[in-house]
Amino acid sequence: MKIKNKPIVFLSIFLILIILFVKVYFFSKIDKAEISFFAFDTNVLISLYEESTEIDYSLLLDDCKNIVDGYEDLFSRTYEDSELYKINNRENSKIECSIDTAFLFFVSKKFYKETNEKFDISVGCLVDEWTDARENAILPTETAIKTAKETTKNINYNMTFLDSDGVEKNCDVIFDEIYENIYSDYIDKLNDLKNKKNYKFFIEFIGMSKYDFGAIAKGYVADQLKYELKKWNINGLINFGGNVLCIGEKPKNKKYNIGINKPFSNGEVIGKIGLVDETAVTSGVYQRYVEIDNKIYSHILDTETGYPIDNELLSATVVCKNSIVADVLSTTFMILGIKESEIYVDELRDSGKDVRVYFVDDNYNYIEY
Image 1 (spheres, rainbow, N blue to C red):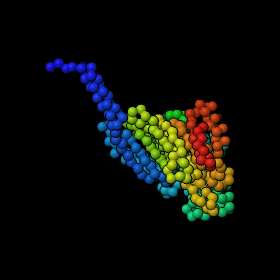
Image 2: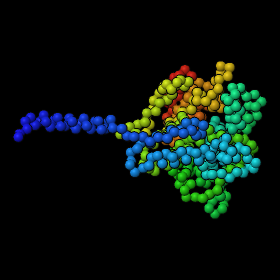
Image 3: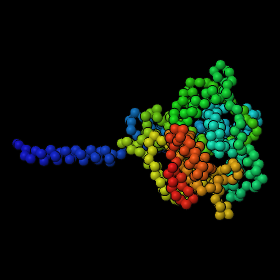
Image 4: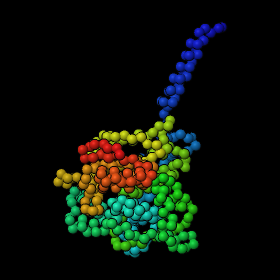
């Protein structure tokens, strides 16, 4: 039997194949494995695309939670067995600690100097006063604020380590090079050090200031999670309560679309940004605050005044490669305000740092810088 109208038949087959391709490519769904839990005083969501049949995603997500829990046991100000709690309630001036805690103190000291003392982890006593204020809706007394404020701007601690020969050296010897890559591949270099060396770390403190990792710890932990997950060549998303970190890209070479919330709204989005293997961290006055006598008091504190920040900024979102940097800068920009932040961003870019910033001011203007 002869087939007539061969061109029409072939065209029909071709169209069917095109339709099947479109359905498979655009409408096939790649499953996601997810885990959500509460840590570091926020909700954590980790989503991984199940693109391999050789990976136990459930087990991997459990490992991720264990990693986060382990770091919370180091960095929590309220867990009595944590390293930071022991540091804040120290009886001796010199404290032994993990390499992770030592590194956060080292990085915090660096950013303190680079931000003209705006980023300050020695804010623990002020944090205590304003945490009580939020919980009880009662302002701290002027005396309490003055006393707490006197303990800030105390980053004059000395950091040392014992090398494999038992020789005590300044931490600058091993941490300076890692910090120089804080905007690029610092986490790889740090973990190379963690995996290869068996050093003991010490911090010697001056005075009795209390320290708080609230504006740096989540970023660091998110970077560590990404480091572990990239070993498996996995794509996914880490949402750490305002800290969003993308691992690779979405399936089919698509960007992750991240929404920036309109402050004080019920989840309304005021702006969107596309990310590929980047992080976006938002700090805002609306995230944790208390309203007393019709005035909003945020959780972001200005050590110059001892009070929560009071400027034109409602939120600042920083996009860059590493979450530790975005975490620090988003808080710093909130303290600086828009004009000083723009000057700082220009300085970073002039020095070759890849940083994008998105502000929302008190008139709800969405500003890309």
